[in-house]
Amino acid sequence: MQAIPPQDKARGILAKKMMKAHITVILLFLFSSFIFAGIEPPTNQDTAPGLNEFYLDSERGWFWYEINENGEKVKKYKEPKKAEQPTVIPKQKTSPKPQVKPEDQSLSQAWFRKNFPKYRDRAIENPHDKEAMRTYLYLEKFMRERAMKFGYARQAAVYAEPFLDATANRATANFGMKDMNIDASNNKQASLKKLGEKSGVFFFYRSDCPYCKRQMPLIKLLETQYGFSIQPVSLDGKALPDSPWENFLVNTNQAQQLGVAKVPAMYLYEPESQKVELIAQGLQSLSQLEKRIMYSAHRVGLISDDEIQKMRPTGLYQNIDGEIGTQIAAPSNAPEEFKKLVTESLKFQKTTEKEFSYDEE
Image 1 (tube, one colour):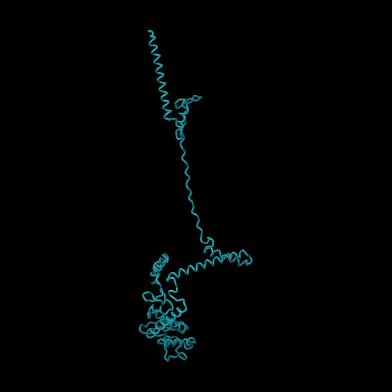
Image 2 (tube, rainbow, N blue to C red):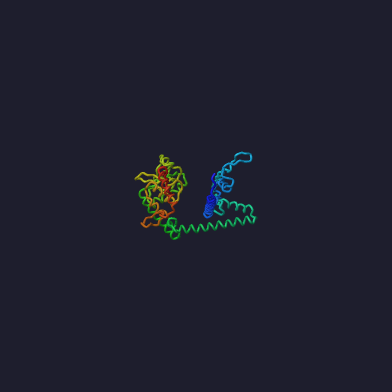
């Protein structure tokens, strides 16, 4: 074997030393790069636990398994646990606050209707219980003052709208009431005279009826004042004592057909149309006879609605067109609830008017 010259041997040793120096410089360069770049082993909790152990326990090697003291293979790193899903607690529905009933609202009208009698009875049953009496009296005063405020507010609201104001139909001043009464009486007299010229009165009586005898002079006044033709009808075939009429008719089932149940009985008749209508059964005053005759004539169409209205001591004011009427039309700004109820009422009347009818009196 040929010996290595001393010079080559020295060169080899120098080359090895230079290689080691280069490797050291490269390692230092890499290490410094990690430091300056700020790279650190991950420590975030989100990082898998196995990776944390790898960085923190790297000196044990990179094998996934290791041999324990019994010679068995065991996992070096534990598999990360699955993150538990948070339990979602459903929101409980908050129940609405219970509404306070009107009768449970202290000192409301509903409360007074329900509870005031209890306090009053307690005071009546225990009049010497000073506190019970005082409580009752305080409640009573509170209720009176509330009623007084309501009364003033109601009056102010009525005065603000002619539709609500009764004085728009009937005067309340003494001179106004007197004038209306006189006008209504004059209108009635005129209508009765007009009616008396073309109609008459059947006067049903019995000769032994004392009330028929007392009714007789008032029936005579209808003849003398208004011109009605009076036709007495005897139910027993005899003349009425002291009768101012020489002739009378004897009932031949006319009373039964008309439905006469009591005497004296008076019926209005109109010869031209042959209409007969009840005035009254039983004793009547002259003013009652006049009023009932007008309504009888109205029912059979012998006088108009306007004539009936003019004989009433109310609603005689004229409107802007000079017409007389009892009702003032509801204003356009009337409460919506009122207008709705009126509309519903009119619909109901249209469906029932064929089944029901009534006579105003």
